[in-house]
Length: 229
Picture: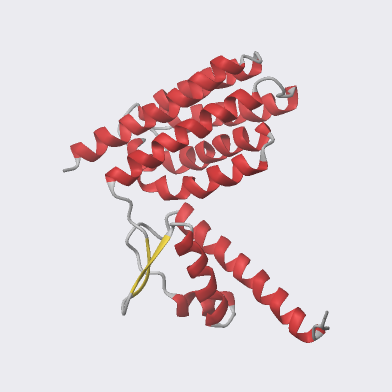
């Protein structure tokens, strides 16, 4: 038997789902922009007050982000931004390398001139940021956008979703690996070679270069982690 749903209840459910999504995106933004760093406490009461919502949707958003691996709930202490151990980071890098290889293989045969122009603009902007006394605060968001566009333009929604589910977990390692002098310029030279292969519709070359780019980032992060011990 099909039973009717109270319209008011349905509206409340939709509103709660919408609020949860908005709050989740806000927490993700705070992590992306380093307002929250690995190990930081997520103040649910502060977020609820700031967003002018009850604590229920905030708690629900935090539960969702815990399931995705971005947050960690510690009993009797609260919710914290998850810290990634080096072993976990290495595994994520390896998975990310495989995703990049696939994205390159999918994108190169069908990329348009307009898409190439978008990517070229980002690469040029990263060159300027890398040259401006190594402005990582400008370079890093452009770096994220360049990688995201590669996956968006590849045209596989599930591949993009999988990539996005991994990318935030690696922020600490990826950003720190770009801090030493010359690292941004090296990384962006790899971006330019990737773009040249994609623009030439070289699927295998693009795939190989994109995988190598992630593995090079993995090596830089491991070097940086060992240097800080």
